[in-house]
Structures are given as C-alpha cells and as structure tokens.
Image 1: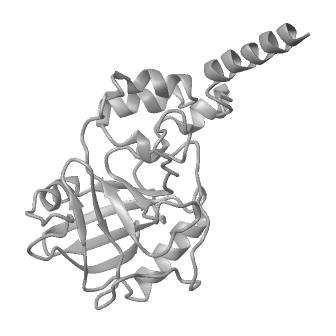
Image 2: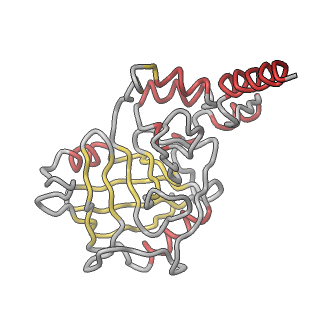
Image 3: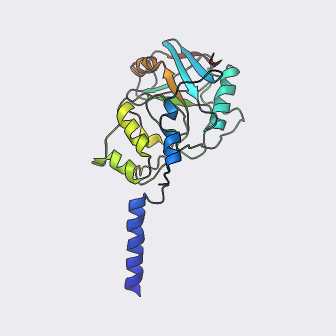
Length: 248
C-alpha cells in the first residue's frame, strides 16, 4: 500500500512539473488570436492616451482600461488632477526600467482611493519593452501611485544556467508572448506571477496597464542618465506634466 501511495505521489509531481506547478496552461485559438499583437496596436480615433512630457522629451502611451480598469483609472485621475506634475523619474536602471509616480515634495505616493489597490493580471499583456506597469512593494495588491516603463531591449536568456524561454514554455506563457519577447525584449520576470517555479525569488508580478507607442527613444535617453547607488538620477529627470489626450 505504501508503495502504491509513493508511486501515486511521484506521478502527481511529474504531472505538476510538466504542467507548470498549477500555473494556467489554458490555451485556445480565440485567446491566442485576441492576445496576439493587441498590446502593440496604436490607439484608434476617440481613444484616450497618456502624453508624458519630460524635460528630456515626450513619451506617448496607449492605455488598457478594459484589461486593467483600476490601474488606468488611478493613473488617469492622478494625471488629470496634476498629481504627477513636477515629479521625477526617481529610480532609473539602465537595461531594465525607469520609474516615477511620487508627487513633488513627497517621499511616497498614494492611490486616488487613499489606500493600496489590487493587482490586475491580464493574460494578454506582458512586460515587453515599452510596457507601462504599476510599481509595488514586492507584496501582492500594494499598488499606489508609482509606475514604471520597461526599457530593456532584449531578454535575460538564462535562469540558473537554464533557458528562460524553456521555463516560460513549460509554465504557461503563450507562444506569442515568448516569440514577442525574443523580438522586442523586455522583462518576463515582472509578469503577473505565471509561476513561482520560474522565478523562485518570490516575485509577485506587476500590473501592465499601458504601452509606449511613441517616444521609446526618450525612454532610452532617460535610462542612460548617471545615477547614484540607489538608482536615483544625479540630475533630475522631471515629469513636467502628464496629459490625457483623445486621439483625433
């Protein structure tokens, strides 16, 4: 009897490994069709987008209110109220991200609700180069006002000496996402916790709610500024204003 139990548990373990330790591997033709290319479509007429004006140039970002309604509402409301005006990209890491969202004169920011709000992980949005995403404290559902833009233009191809793309495939990332990461770069370890087995450091993932469609050259220039040991630019990179603009 004990031997049968052992065999049964071993079989379950093998199955878990092959299926990504419980991560969703659900795929369908409809999903793949819906997800493919959606993040990189330009805004259509009448759609609102974010125009981030900085002292180093302008960045235009398409927003995804259907996929991440809370994050977009929070960002858009703050922007319209001038919450981000005069603030800075306070954390810049070359070949990774540029981060902002703390109002001028403050050491921390908060959401429009005065408290943290929950993560919104959409299986069609990923941390490709140019993704706009919510920063958090490293714990689930700790979104406030801070955001970042992914700047990396390639992908770290190995984790513990093994192919990251192999990990991703085994753990449920759609084939389209894997191929797009290869094409444009980005940071898949920031994705909404597809599987802790892939990144055992406990990364909880982040909420993607936008995508740069113009101004990635400005993002790259910001990422090149000289920073101190904490990633703070030695000369301020100022977010002069974030405007919410309707596409003509």
